[in-house]
Image (cartoon, rainbow over all chains, first blue to last red; front, top):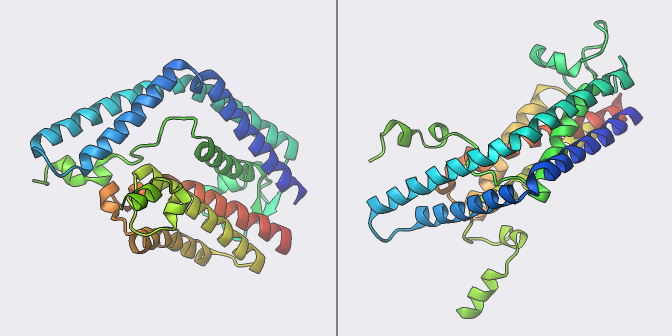
Amino acid sequence: MADFVKLLALSLVASGASEAISYYLVYRTEQFQHLKQSIVRNEVKLDEEKRATTGNAQRRQRRIESIEAQLSSTRSKAGSLQLRCTLIVGVIQLLVIYQVNSIFGSAPVGTLPFEPLSMFRSLTHRGLPEDSPSNACSATFVFVLGGLVFKSLIDRSLQLGIPKGSSLPKWVTNPEDVIGGKK
Amino acid sequence: MSANAAEKKTLTLWQKALTRDEDWHKDELRAVVFWLISAYSVFLGLFYGLLGFRGLPCFITYFVGSIALPSIYWTSYLGVDDEDFGGKMEVLGDSIGSGVAMFLLSWVGVYTMIHA
């Protein structure tokens, strides 16, 4: 159990450090802040246009499409700014995972209350010997889970990055718009 | 009327989350849903871990609850139509992944501490 807690602490530190690197390299720059404010403004405008019921519907639709195009372009620029720090953070995370494997060795750090599917065994049993019990839990699995949790909590609490916007592609949320079925 | 309008303007996000029939923006709703799913995930993981529950039924109940509970909350209590925001998955979207990680972490951690 002590190893489990140590891994959580390590993943918290790694997530915090990743966010700090992203902030130092990208989020605090004037260019990124300008893009972020532009995205927030356009999101508000888009929301207002979509909720509006008065006025010419065709003109409103054209305005909506224009704002969506602007948003898409701005997000793409912000994304390319973030790419450099994403690569750096990715390399750091890989190095930390390598260190986790070498520090915690081949001993399981927990017991899974389920039988993992074969496609997940490479993660849940990473670094463990072949003859380890099927419900043994590897250090890498705990570290990765911790990283996912802490990254999302830090993102949501600090909101340093660009606003999420539409997380799913349009063909999933509004397929009738994409295939032209809606009149 | 103007007193009511002034009251509405000063509602924090969490006050709004406990008030029916307010106007919601997508980001606000997604923030509330994120924290709701996070709390549910941790609570269910702790519950299953403490009682030593194992196996596939725990996953099934988790996934059903993580979609049903927020949907019922925003539809029945908040009075929000998720079609206004692009559908159920658009509102839930980025909360499910982190919710699963929180559920697994709390479930495995408590199970290991008590039953292993």
